[in-house]
Length: 130
Image 1 (tube, helix red, strand yellow):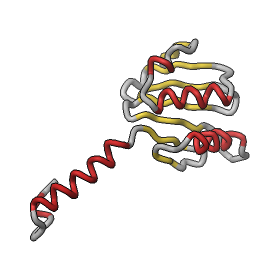
Image 2 (cartoon, helix red, strand yellow):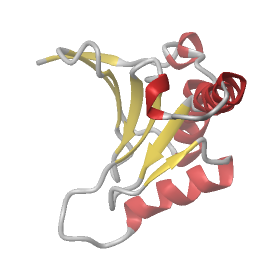
Image 3 (spheres, helix red, strand yellow):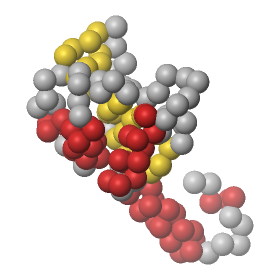
C-alpha cells in the first residue's frame, strides 16, 4: 500500500486500517456462484442449499452452480447430479462424479469449504483430462 496516498494520516492509524482489512480478507475462504452468476462469500449451509435449488429453475442457458475454495479447487454441480471437481491452477485435469444426490453435493461442498480436499477425494471421482 502506498503510504503517500494517505497524506496527514498518522502511520499508526494506517497500520490499524490495513490490519483490520487484512483480517477480513484472510477470513474469506470460499464462495459460491449460482446459475445466474450471483456470488456469495462464505455462505451458510442453508444458503448453499438455496444455491443448489437454483439448478431447478428454468432459464435460457445451461445451468451450473459451484462452490470454490481459495486454494483454487471448486466443485461444480449440474442439474443431472453430475459434479465436476477442478482446480483453476491445473485446468487440464478435471474429476467427474456422476449421480450425486443433493445431500451428497452439500456434504462435499462443506468439506471443500473447510479446505478438506482429502475428504472430497474419497469419492469415486473419474479422471477427465482435456
